[in-house]
Image (cartoon, rainbow, N blue to C red; front, top):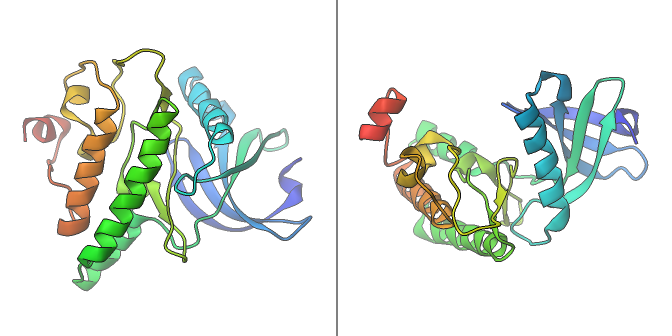
Amino acid sequence: MSLNDFTNLKTLGKGAFGSVHLVKRNQDQKIYAMKRVKISNLSIKERENALNEIRLLASLNHKNIIGYNDAFYDEKSSTLNIVMEYADDGDISNKINYNLKNKLIFDENTIWNWLIQLLEGLEYLNSKKIMHRDLKSANLMLTKKGILKIGDLNVSKVAKVGMAVTQIGTPYYAAPEIWKDQAYDYKCDVWSSGVIAYELAALRPPFRGTSLKELYCG
C-alpha cells in the first residue's frame, strides 16, 4: 500500500506530530481520515508515540473511539500513514469557536449528550488499562449522526502499574498532579473531562494564563 492508492481531498488539520487529510481510497471510493507523520522530522520519542498510536488504535473497538483501518510506510515521501475512520462533523473545539464568534451557547441536552459519550469512551479506554492523557475539545470528533469519537491517542499510555510519572498533556486541560510532576493515574482523564464540561458551558477553559507559570499559579 502507498499514497498512490488514495486521492487526497483536503487537509483537515496540522499538529505537532504531522498532518491529517481527508482521503478517498481509489479501490472502493471509501472516505477516510489519514494522519501523515514525517518520520525524518521526529525524535526517537516522537517516533515511539506515532507507533504507539497505531498499536493502540488497532487494539480498540468502541463506537466512541476513532476507528483504525490500516497503516503503512510510504518510501517516496518518507511518511508513516495511519488510515482512520473519518468523523464528518468536525471537532468540538471548532464548535466552541463557532459559538464564540456568533455569540451562541450550547443547550444543556447537547452538553450532556457529548459528556455521556465522552465518559463512555473513557470508561472503555480505562477498562483496557489505557490512560488517554491528552483529552481536550480538539481531540473530540463528531459525526453528522451525533456520535462523539475520542481521537489522537499518540500520548496515551497502557498502565502496567497503578501510577505514572511523566509530564504530558495540554496545559489548559492537565490535572494538578501532572503540573506538579507527581504520580498520576486514570483520574487525570476525569479531571480533563471536567475541564471540557466547563468549556462547553462557558465557551472557555476554567484556568487560563499568558504563560505556563501564570497558568500553574492560577
